[in-house]
Image 1 (cartoon, helix red, strand yellow):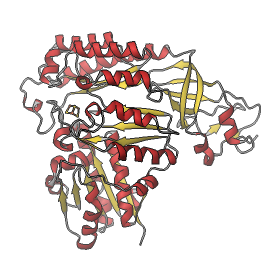
Image 2 (cartoon, protein in one colour):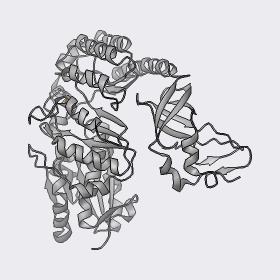
Image 3 (cartoon, helix red, strand yellow):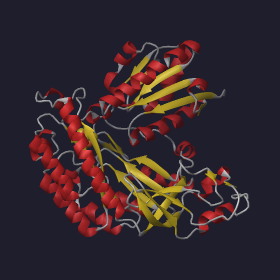
Image 4 (cartoon, protein in one colour):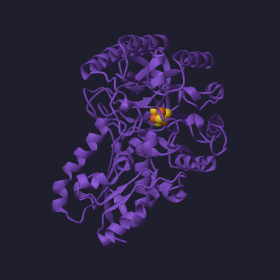
Length: 482
Ligand code: SF4
């Protein structure tokens, strides 16, 4: 079979990152191997996101840039998948006529067949069929090959959403909620672990309702099975819905030692009036009560959230309530977004829209407040010893060591999901040292104790308490050349 090159551009959330890996895996059967260069590619796949207007614009601007390449290489196949593909279907080909394939969020398993058809007939294809049941898309062996390497890996445990929040496109573009079988999830995580994964993040739009429709085990029971996998060090999950955040899951945070000390629980607004218009089905009071209960069971847990500002009808008083909630809960971090109309959503039809200028001012006020809270929270870590899962050399400082001092910086995360850049605590006396970057992966994936020395808005920095493991990795002579 001839080798052909595949370039994938992924826009959007972790779910899309996972889907792109599945796409790469499926297309191996046709002889495609991945390249980082679009110029070298025989097939380009754009995996899109439509959760916000900006992400959608980004997708079309990338497609626009491909026009010259397509002229130079007329046999280049271009496919568009993901949420924008599901939402726009044939309109994408109308807008960008050189596209060969548009495939929806539940068409990944059919992709090799679609690509083969284009290869042999040079036809234009649109496949946005959305079956209620999500087929298992990949076989065990190919997934194992595709997933080699990362210390931290994602796994989708469910797809779609049944909640229909009034601002959200997900139920329209990802379909009804459906869960994968626990056996297949456990099998895939075991395969990840065999290839070096130490941390896994379970993905779903609302993991709390895992298995309910299909009568499978509950989400906390699934977590407990994952916790029993030998060789795995950490478990994370995202995203939870506050209305379904159960006591059973709170107790899982108390009882499962591998479950990380971090919960991302999107609240979206601090005003009950706005929450009702968003169709979120909980109140601010219930949200606060759940966080308080959780903190009693796991006092040092970090809590992050999502917030939308400028939702239709949001008054100054509603916005003040949001700021009030932020103060009460004290989030460790916040992803804040300006509301924008999305196609087919109920909120897009609401008439009482907020002017852009006001939305921007509110966002800035909210971000300023959150920055102060996060800095304060981060400062609380200074002087403490944290266990860090080493992900590799820090991008900024990982490659060159100079001034006769070992300044190699490593990077990893605390259990509370804070990024920590750290040195190994060992000084070289003279000369310039070089690192053998081919050995980098050997040092990743270990848990190491780091004393936190400084706190910033988005990260922490410190020094390893036990430098041994990193130094041993390099066995002295290859790591440092005087
Ligand atoms: S819970 Fe609401 S915001 Fe989250 S994916 Fe479902 S509809 Fe969208």
